[in-house]
Length: 461
Image 1 (tube, helix red, strand yellow):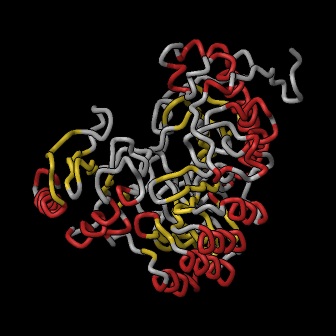
Image 2 (tube, rainbow, N blue to C red):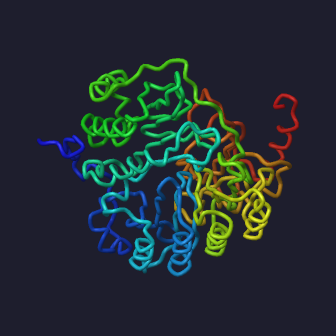
Image 3 (cartoon, one colour):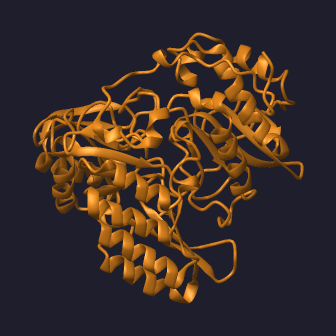
């Protein structure tokens, strides 16, 4: 079979291999006819939940213009309900009623959709929220990211990837989410005066890299990995980890090395990052400029909040906002002298701007109020917990074992077992899932008491 312009030999897996769901009136927008069935929401595929439809808006590198933010606020106000920042630096609107076609039209008109319907699912590329402005970065990832996103959208072969198949491009920034697993990750580092990209499969940049490529081969690496995955994976193996459960990693890398030059790598370790760089004011790589990070409580925004943030971006920044994997947002390119005004503006919008605020540290899924699988009202319980904690702690409340709100394992996880009651886990790198089970069936008040006692214990100092 002849190769296309990128040298990719089409071998489409059958559409029947993907999970199916009933066709809903919510998906009757003309552009949605090319969508394959999936349980994952997209901009064109609105998926029903207990509280209505969910529309997920994938943002290029997490970035959105002020005008686009206004458009999201407008359609959410007119047709939907809550706006949520996701843990992949995207936005979603939930609570959507039956007028979904008009909502989709508004988002497409704002330039927030894919080039074609089939390309919506595969725009899964995560960058640092501080790409191009971070003082620690080795290179500006946005150019390479644009190439990758163009390829993902323009080549039909890649449209057969799972809606969950994801790539991370890390430029070595100080502000970076390093704990979310990706099917392919790339991380920049310096070696003998040259910028290289370490890479790994089915993991995170904190894992051991399987090799490195020169910076100019970064795009070719992504194309080769995705092409090889589609050639080797059976239809039911929708993620890289599924393939590597059966195929030795060395065999995959051996075949990959026949397609582009891969450098062996040893003794490389991704530099650690600080916990709080997505909150508050932080200097950029340009003198006199800062970015401001603000956290909507539990990832939820209303239209007034989003419009207000957009107006701050116009007045004090470069007219854009960036969303983050911490379910927060950044306003980049602020004059340092204006930082206090921007912080005060965010505070007036009820956005958290201090790392010491408990609600800035808590994450919670939709819970039983909006999800049929949720066993507790996690967002209400999280707000109660925030009033009881003596100090801000990184805590994840999950309404069921699926862990939709967190792609990583939080230091503390509360797993709902019934309304108002949770099992308590502490992260343990030696254990899978949420970590070590510490106590069962606790009320929120009991959780707060236990965590307060633990924080005062000299064993945990």
